Image 1 (cartoon, rainbow over the protein chains, first blue to last red):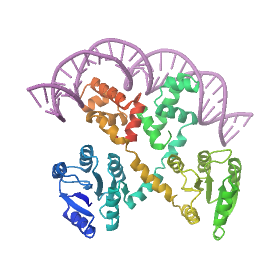
Image 2 (image 1 turned 90 degrees about the vertical axis):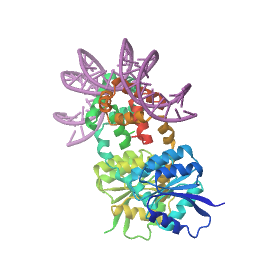
Image 3 (image 1 turned 180 degrees about the horizontal axis):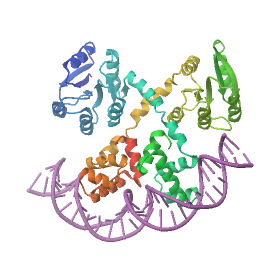
Length: 211
Length: 211
DNA sequence: AATTAAATAGTGGTTTACCGCTATTTTCTA
DNA sequence: TAGAAAATAGCGGTAAACCACTATTTAATT
């Protein structure tokens, strides 16, 4: 049983590259090649591949748009993003949409092959380069410490309860303090963190890991 | 110039393990060994190591507590967490506090050595096992898609503006619709997402990448 | 063409959050 | 041990959010 692979990319050079990579792999067959979003959506109605190699930007539609539609209607199709951009945010978005992998176009042949096979077997694949970036990204967020020391112990405590969707009155009852006190702490945090309302407080709390 | 290494861990077996690993590395000297938080804080006042191997749970104080205090007073000390737990959330927390690395106690000798040296040289180090988990964690968050389709286009639009700390009135003006309409969308989202207030909305938005 | 879902707008009301003050007690720290 | 920072509590008031309805107009889908 051969693996049916479809490619959606408007750069012939990429398509040819993939083709040559797969020259010696008889168990993978390229069944369809699309160079724009419209033809991809049309074609996939009639014939669903096992794995779809999807470019991030086709001339008429974006990767996220296409992935959303395809995964909704044909959830069994495994989408492997083939992109030239390594913006982590975009990577995260596509994976959250349900894509099974994300590789960069400048990956070497073996990596691409490995990715296709991993995804086909129900696995998930992320370019080694991106894995490295993910780790670095984790260290990079060190703005935390500044805001972390900005708030007092009690303020952090109250902030956590705010994130947990409690009202000021509930927080007051829980901590055995007056409603006024909670309000004071809350406003004090609004000033310290330079945000306008609850939304801002929750945002900072989640971003800096205070909650 | 020898690297001064301090170890804070209450398990003699761990300390001995480290000692034996470093037997053949004359450029690393173990200057201090502490088996509880108090003595660590005392000792570090008099003599600061280049790198501190810190256990996550000492008998009297927790890792986060100790790291916070130490990094505040002696920011030049590089803390390398040596933990037996691999809960990603804890890893993230420690790194956000400003620790320079996180390795598991069952790491092999070479990894531990590599970690100490990397950290000393101003680098950051994360156990390979944890790097792998970080990638898996990224894929795991697929709850997104469910909640993603739950909200309508307009609702998502409004949710983003809420996250950006806008009031209902501001949102209404921005979208050229009535204040009532915005309120309706907002309440509709509260029900759909099963949250109680703005805090809940923002939380879901950030968690699922809707904003 | 018919049905559904989404977006729109309203009434009327309650609850909660936000704001600027003052002021006391407690806790930390130099 | 004096001074600072934090936690506590209050007053009076405005703005915003939350809630339960009804109802019309636009898409979208079948």
